[in-house]
Structures are given as structure tokens and as C-alpha cells.
Length: 324
Ligand code: SF4
View 1 (cartoon, protein in one colour):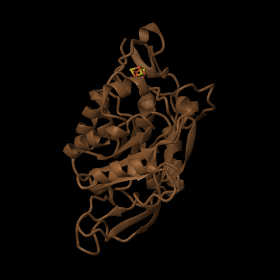
View 2: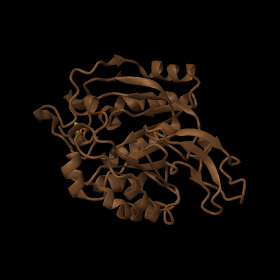
View 3: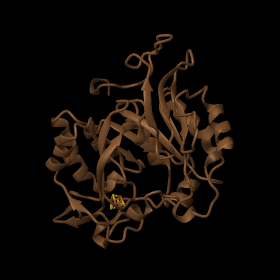
View 4: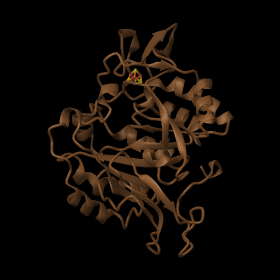
């Protein structure tokens, strides 16, 4: 029986699939570890990163283990690529939602590992969370099928999609995935109907020169999309490489800012590329600081619920579920 959650379409009658998270039982594809998680903690939305929705709000971030990709520079490799008996804990959807409500969080974010590999558990949480008015989203590599994309669209409010390159060659050599095409297709599908932000992790001597081509693709999706160019510090198989050069990357990012004014660039001390700046009058509307982790830290919102105080331009910032 073929698993249809992601584009590997693994035949589970032959044993484990690529992610090792599903099995065939009674003619159904089921999770091997339902409701089992490895992380559950509070996180500010800017850390996900999501910059254009619910500024300075906290979410419950929850994740499991394993992945359907094998990025050579994965920052969570001990949990996603070769987890050695990861320590998991069981939490039912009700318990997860209660935890988020008790902490007065705005919603729930699935991160840490690729949520596609434990999707039924995540969807069960999402359904329960939405009944309580919580917002639900995830970070994903988007290497999922069209069928899974509709499941995501029906159950999740926001996505941070990692578009790691625009070339099949890079996806094959650095992620172990056969093609970028499903990722592009899923971005095209989800962007008009959900809140979508894009993250592109940049590795040294890897994908930095693809920044203009990725920008061209995102421009067609919509020039107001938030794009996080993320400087990956050497990790996992690339641990001995030099970190990407800040000045060179900044020059590339600068060149695409006219086209995509909400392009952000972080993960180095002193980045002044993480503020949301009004593209009409250059006023800093949402100020953040990069303190060298994923995303940034919120400092100040000088807009009037997303409207620039100086010139009245409406910025693409969501404050409420109704705007999603
Ligand atoms: S979700 Fe896992 S088992 Fe299913 S197709 Fe993808 S890699 Fe294979």
C-alpha cells in the first residue's frame, strides 16, 4: 500500500518508508507513534519566524521526530535525521490544547521536525484547537502531495514554508529530495488561501546565487510576501564549512528589495534587515532585533494595526484570525 502523505509515495507493504513514521495496518496507512512528541514549549511568533501576523504573540510550539528529507545542514539533525531513541512524551490533543489555553497562548505551531510525518496527530490537535479559538500553523518543507496540501489548507491557518532552492540539483544533492517542483506547486496553492511566509536557509557555496531566481518566483506569488533569508551557521554534515558571508548576502538581498520589499535577512549580530519598513515612506513600522537565533525578537510596533502612521500605507500584517 502506498503512503500518499508526501511525494515519496513509499510502498509500506515493503517495510518502513523514508520517514519511518507510518505503517500499513488493516489496509490503512497509520502513524507508528501517534500523539508522541519530543518538544513542547512557548515561543514568540517572530521566532518561527512569522513577521506578518500576530506581532509579539506567543504560541505553543510542539514537534515530534524524524523527517522525509535529509538536509546536509539540518539544525535539528539529532531529532530529524538520525534520532537515537528520541525521548518522547505522550500528549493527547486535549492535553496539548489545554496547555496552550492555560498559558494564554495565541495558538499552536508545529515545528522542530517535518509535520507531514506525524500529520494525523497534528490535525487532531488542530481541530480541537480551532474549536477553542486558537490559531494553528506549522513550519514545513512542503514536499507533500496535493491531497495533503488540502488537508493542511482545511486545518491550518498559517505556514512558514522552507524554500531551500529553486533547483532540483540542489534539492537532490543537499536535501536528498528528488525535486523542488512539489514545493513550488504547494506554495502556489497555499499562498492565496492561507497566511504563508517563506524561509530560505542559505549555506556557504551552496544556494546564495539562487537568491535572484527565488525572488523572481516569489514575486509571481505576490510582491507582499514575507521572505526570510536565513543565514545557516555550519551544522551537521557541513559543520566544517565556513559560515555564509554576511556582506555578500546583504548585497544580494539589497538587490531584490525593490521587487520584494518584505525580504528579511538574519542570523547574524547587528542585522538591520529584520524590521518591517514601509515601502512607501521608509518608516520603520515594526522594529525587531536579531539576536542570532531563528527569526528575531519583537521590539516595537509603530503602526496602527498594520497601517503606517507616517503615510497611511496599509502593510500586509495580520492581527486577527478574521484576516487570515
Ligand atoms: S510521509 Fe513518510 S512514509 Fe509517507 S510517503 Fe512520505 S516519507 Fe514515505
